[in-house]
Image (cartoon, rainbow, N blue to C red; front, side, top):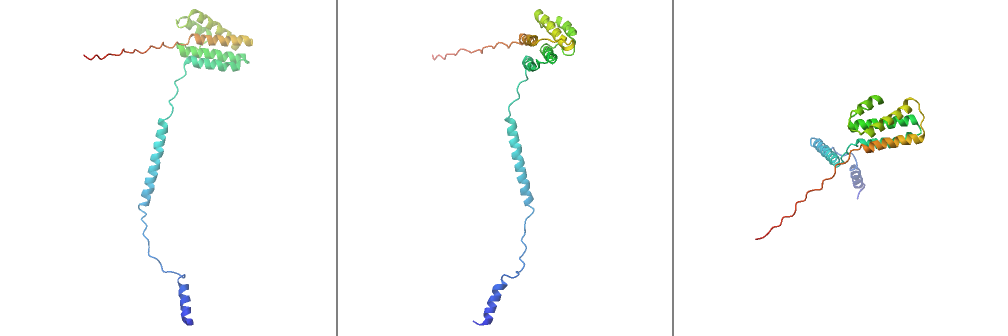
Length: 192
């Protein structure tokens, strides 16, 4: 081989790594790409909405509202935390009892003075005579502590608490007696 041929072969090898010719344009269909993105977004939104609906339908139904006597018993138990502060304890216990009587018997107890409340109470048959007498004494004792700065002993406060609890328990509505289901006797099919 001659020198010229070797140079030509070497030049040809180098020229393949040199600048190449411009390639023809490649057509990219951009019109359908946005359509695929919208369809994907709709699919994700549908899945999220379906999941939320499924979770909402599986939630636990709300508990029934707390009855007046259960709420009063809970508040009376919480009032025991205030037994070291007689005035606040008597306010909590008497307010609980007044609110209970308003919810249970529709008395207008919380906004009235003890005297106004007791006058209204005398005309109602919803409480018996002993309960009315007890309630009057209870509210008067609480008023002495709340307004006259009477300092009862802890034993006196515990008695007030038990008395309020007893009144709530005595006036608690009794559950209706469960009526047993009526079961029809089986019928006999007599073949003739």
